Length: 99
Image (tube, rainbow, N blue to C red; front, side, top):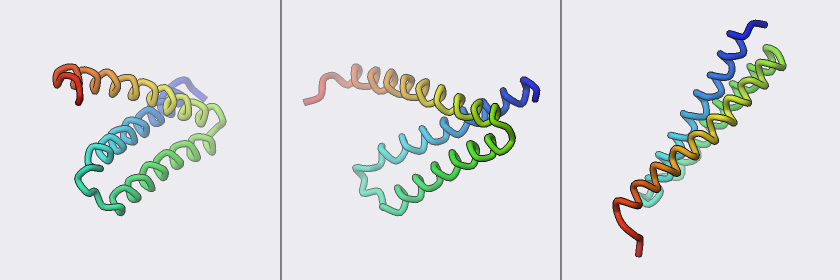
């Protein structure tokens, strides 16, 4: 196993979490607009399938590949949460205090 393989699995985990985060963000932004239950359920199933596919394929390749994908997923999740938190915080500062 080469370091390049581990890096690629790590990046696969990162990519899945980035797509998951933006999909969740899109869903949450549209909840007040009578978003159909089918879109919410479909998005959830798609996110679950993508995450499962990357992790299962990674662990089937080798244990270290699966661990790299999982670490990429976890690290990316924390980075995306912090990024979105900072972004939303800046938008609230511009709008002023909420009533």
